[in-house]
Length: 461
Image (cartoon, rainbow, N blue to C red; front, side, top):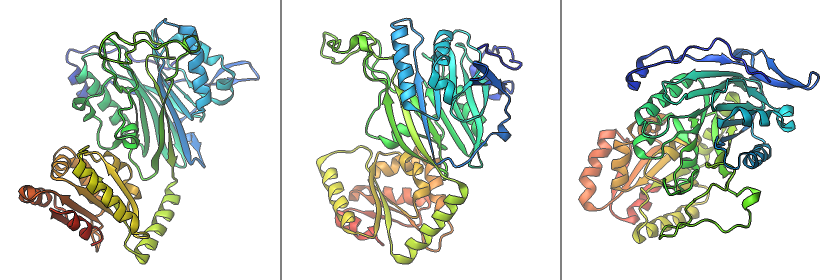
């Protein structure tokens, strides 16, 4: 299949990558959409317009993102296993990074791909990103300010009447943090008008100084569903610690809820099955000295629930009326900032027992880390919410998570009876400071307590 594109803008040059935030020339341009024509026995370009691509009746979407590694090391054997993983994954959208022309051609020869998928026709110069989709969609490329030929590739369509976008990136690598931030900002800007938005790929960072560049409107699915699991997508090597550059970000919406996420491609390719694993001769264990998996990255496979606007309004309204007529039923979130000392764990265990005994009054009780990602991700499911936290967690969310906290409190504004409560379980030395922080945030209902008995007393107030 000959790849074609519409008029491609010239490559950009710039002195200071930060200036790209203020440059308008990074505009998207349309690339071809291809579908295999079995009558003609070839891949054929399909003419589509985003406003006309409408898919109805979707209740769930599945995604795969995978950096498949351009290296020659075991290239053919790895490619076979990667294509098996993609076929078995049966995802609605597959987003690939580091795709070579040779790996692209091998993929296009797969019968399962030809039967079920549309393919983005962006040109390959060296290596690139690629999207394949079970649904008809219009593909675009948005150039980045880059030293490494990086860009955003994305698909637009309308699902259940909702404008939807699915994009993939391979952000600048190495010590280019400022450039990665600029590239990420361009993605968020491009997707700002979409109710359903999904951004995935190799982000090339896994540290808090850059994690904060993910704007509050987006949730990192792994951190939401597995807050205590680092979820490394690249194992430790002699040159690098294990880390998680690969992510799936979901725009927070009442119409979308994350269901599952898992890593794929963690098993060795057949030629290495049964071999002893390489281990560095030092105190460090399980260090990878040779890549034996299908790629040097692990892939991610995820699923999300999609709700129609009408269905959500009906079910939400019914649930709201039913619950407030029958009884006080609460969602409780214990935020402890990963504190796991014996005293804290005892109190948590006792609280879990207490709320479990209150059958009919408790909808959910969950322990989460210090941030508000999980709470924001499930916010549309909450008719009421009680946060239980210590002083350190209170300080963290009122300083580092202010935008997120504002979104939470705004949901419960203008209610006759406030359905958002905060209980700070701390010692007497922190009472005054806790009260000041709560007043500063304008919490309508909050209690500063210094005993577990008081925590229990205020749960169902």
